[in-house]
Image (cartoon, rainbow, N blue to C red; front, side):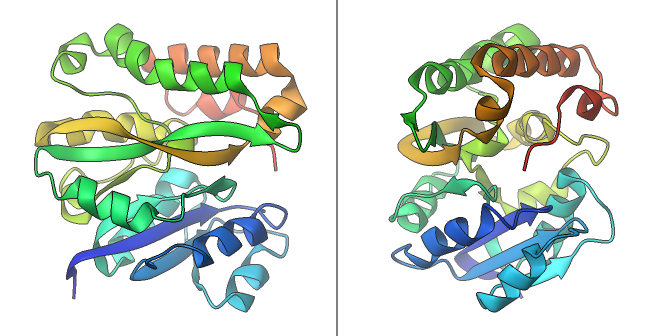
Length: 245
């Protein structure tokens, strides 16, 4: 039974044994705590599931691989009416539960997120962080201008987006053909219920892709994949977005 005003934090994972312990530790520090935390695994071959279960987290194996499929599976089984999708390499602020519930009390809002701060051992990557922020504006302006002028912003996975479970189910959730940018599609689908926006609070997300690819190559990959998505590509996006763990 869905409980009123409760929050499920949903963490889709795949071979995240390096990042997951620190993320779960950050979730344990949230005050107040969410009503539910769920991990949905896409068939990891490392110790991801073992780590989740050792932490006492409700962890389940999705019958289909892919982040969109994992999110759909987790939301369908969630026991609360608000869901926050948290990547395994992203940390929420300590008062995130209050921020999320307060934001979703506004019925004009369909979907929201935090502001992502890309960081690693050497500190914050402010250039990439700034690009991530302005991308939420220029991406819908270029790709879906009619929605942009209705107040819709395109939010992405490292923003820790959150939404109402019943509305997510009403639009059939994420497009499972998408291995990346499924969250941008979700913004567009949920726009029928209201606005999408970022709340003015940071989440910290790993800069591991930028570290691996280099700053310029990383931004080139982000731009290329975004343009492909805007032109209608779906199944081929993952071929241009190397997997980093």
